[in-house]
Length: 327
Image (cartoon, rainbow, N blue to C red; front, side, top):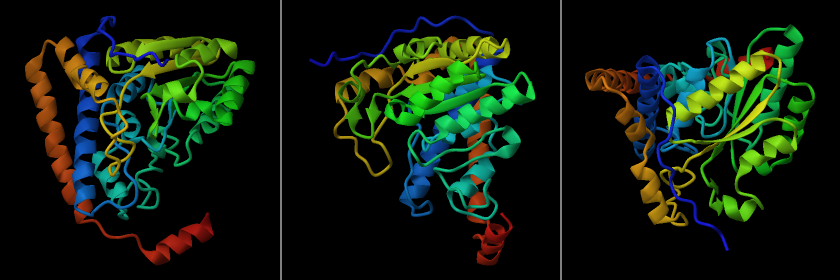
């Protein structure tokens, strides 16, 4: 019989208000960004698939705030929050997802392949688990160069059952690579419950099986994610190698915009929504006036971003062909 998991209670450690405000700005920006993209999708201004990060924003915000500007991340097809939390420009991101020439990837990557070299964001990947070996390779590059950087490799519970997960985590363990494997366990691989796809649904236990620490944290609590990532990054910088962090969360809807998510446990979804990442972090912050200013500023930036993208040119076919030839 499958044991039903309930949303966890808030028992996170305490961090400075400045850090919490920074994380809140990333969470709020991601939430508003995703809702804006859903609206644009409904208007027919975004094509293809759109996989919202709604409900999972605390993981990207906590992890990216805990690392340094010159550290790397590798993302997934549900990667808008990762890009935003690593410093992605909202104007260029909206333009990219709308397929415009002014986008981060000149409209060639779209939603599932968004990246930003300037932010050391190695990019999203439409292949489930496809980013895990790339992150491990980046970790090997750091080790060879002898810098003190780290890589945060984001991936899902579904991706953890792919062969590349085992290969990558084993390699990172052998060579003590500075990689933080951030397993975003939102409990569903498309529509399959994690309990039905994994013999042991507490996936952090896979870390010790490969000789690295395996830590489970509340993925709806940005502070908990921040503290776990900071500790893992410090360990990596000391040459002690990789860490697997399982951040348990719950997405707020189906796998993509057109998936109604009817297979989801509605009572459990209600419980997780009561512990929304925004609600949890907002409750810890004392300076409510500052929170309101952050929200107003981001709302204004997104309005400008949408207008910028709508007024941006479509990609040039000639330039596209030339870039293929040059590359």
